[in-house]
Amino acid sequence: MENIVNKENMSDELEFLSKKILELNKKLIDGEKAKSRFLSLVANKLNNPLTAILGIMPHLKIIDTQENKLLFELVYKEVLNLDFKIQNLVMASEIESGNIDISYALVDPKEIIDEALECLKYLIKEKNIEIKIKSSIKQKVVTDPKKVYIIVKNLISNGCRYGFENSVITIALDIEDSMFVIKVKNQGDAPKVKYKPEIFTRFAKDADGKHGLGIGLSVVREICERVEGSIDYEADDGFVTFVVRLSLDENMVDSQAYGSNEFLFESFDDAIEL
Image (tube, rainbow, N blue to C red; front, side, top):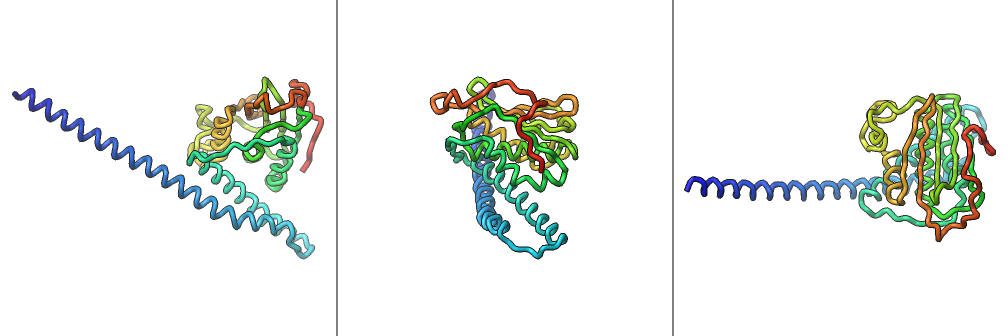
């Protein structure tokens, strides 16, 4: 009789614990949904006025003095930096909500690189970094230009932040095994993490070993995963190279659009000095 009572008690406890687990799981799911909605709301509310400011700033007339030019550059730099952070927040909110759209278009990858460099020009200038570009892609490719823009902007920004001053960042574009390959190589110390995935995890340690938001590289990783691609990095002899591989639909691209798949970082056809 005692055994029967004990079994009934255990059954009641298991049922109670199961209900508690289900309740906690529901609260967790609801909490994640609320966080995603809040993130999306904040990002979009900030994005609209900032877009207007960015459109106005290049047309502002300033008194032609060195002091005013420096002040204008400082304000413009901070506005561009804020816009960059909001772009990452918007993308992060889209990824979390599951509403991320992949929109393909025929684009020139070099033009996307140039646009990213224009938005990062003050950061590049601040650290006196030379940008060198090497591309073996001779024609346009079919990819998602917005996602590629976010990827290269984050990788170049990362190279500027953690690379040495007065150094070089090289950007290489190629096609390898039907994959669109982007390599960003900067001169700098290896990331101070124990495991590689830490670099691509939000709210983990930054590349310099300090804690930060870590949104940029996490967004890059998540974008790559959603377009059947990948990201990795190698650190060797004072250089850090991030390699992104994005899948290409062979039915959507012209196989004659690509040149040789072989190139060296030490050889460049195109150099940009900012």
